[in-house]
Figure 1 (cartoon, rainbow, N blue to C red):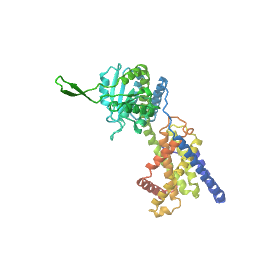
Figure 2: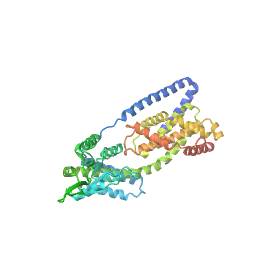
Figure 3: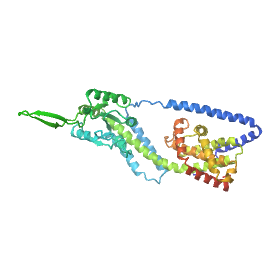
Figure 4: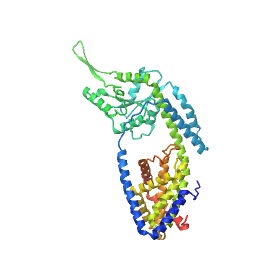
Length: 473
C-alpha cells in the first residue's frame, strides 16, 4: 500500500522536531528541564499503569443472563457483516462455504434434535455412561456424543469444539476438579454452554467421603454451574461379592453386577430438556454464529495484515531516516512517536477503526511510554549498538544506533497495533476505549517474537545497507 508523505501528523511532527532543535541550540537548559519533566511523567505513568494492572487481576464471577433470540439474531448479523466485509475487501477469496453456513443458521431455531455431549478427562467413565444413557428413554430426539479425552498429551481443540457444538455438556469427574478443568468449564460457560457436572464412580467412596466430595464440587463451581446440576452417579458400579448358602452347608460365592446409579441424573435431564429446550437451542445457535464470525474474521485479518505490513515497513524507514539525521539525540523518541502516530492512522483505516488524529497521537505516546516502562527501548538500543560494532564505518556515524533503533521500535509499534486491531470489532472507536493492559500484552508478545538474534542481525544488516546507499530514505 503506497503511503504519501504529505500526512498532517507527520508534517506537523517534523516541523515540531525542527523547531525544538532550534530551541535546543538557543536554550539548552530549558530543554534539559523539559527532559526531566518527560521522565517524571513517564515515572508517574508507570505507577498508574501498575496500579491499574493490579486492580484488573481480580476474578469476576461468570454471571450470564438467559440468552434471548435477539442476542442470537445479533450474532448472526455480526457474522453476516464480517462475511460481507470480507467479500468486499478480498473478492478473490473463495468464501462460498461461509456463505452457505450463514444461510443455514436461521433454520437452527426450529431444530428438533438435540445433541448432548459426554465429556471429561481420561478414565472418568464417559463410554460407560454413554452406553447407559443410550439404553434409557430420557427424551425424544436426543443424540449422544462422546468427546475425546480432555487434557491428554496429544490434545488439540477437538474435545472442546465438540462440547461447544453440542446443546448440553455432561462433564465427568471422579473427584475434585483440577484448576485446568475448572477454567475450561468457566470458559464454556462464557460461551452460553449449559453444563451438568457429574461426580462419577461415587460407589468407590464411603457415604461420608462421597458427600464431602459432592459438596466440595458444588462449592468450587458455584459461580459457574447451578447446585442442582452437580450430581453424583455411578455409571458402572463395581461388582459386589454375593455369598449363597447351599443345602449341604457349603457357601457359593459369585461376583454380581450392580445396576447403574444414574436416577438423579435422569430426572434432572428430563427436567432440563422439557423446560429449557429452547434455551439450549438458542445457545448452540449463538455459538455456531460466533464461530462462523471468527472464521470470517481470521481470513479478513490475513488479508488486512498483507496490506498493513508494507505500510509498517515504509514508516519504519521514515522513522530511521528522521532519527539518523536528527541532530538532537533527546528528540529521537519524539520524532519516532510522530511517525508512529501517522502510521497508526493508516493502520486503523485498514482495520476500519475510528481513530482520529488526536487518538492516534495519544496511542502513539502510550506505546512509547510502555516501551520505556518495559525496558524495550534500552534493551533494543544496547543490542543494536552491539551488533553495529561489527560495521565500524556505520557504527562511527552518530545517528546509526538511533536511526536503526527508531526503525525497530516503529516496527514493534506497528505489529503490536495490528495484533490489537485484529481483536476489535469493525468500526469500533478503539481510541476512546483503549485497553492498556491488552495493548501491553500485545507489545510484550511482539517484542518477544522479534528480539531473536537472527532477526535483529538481519534487520540491522538491512538498515545498514539503506543508510550506506541512501541515508535520507
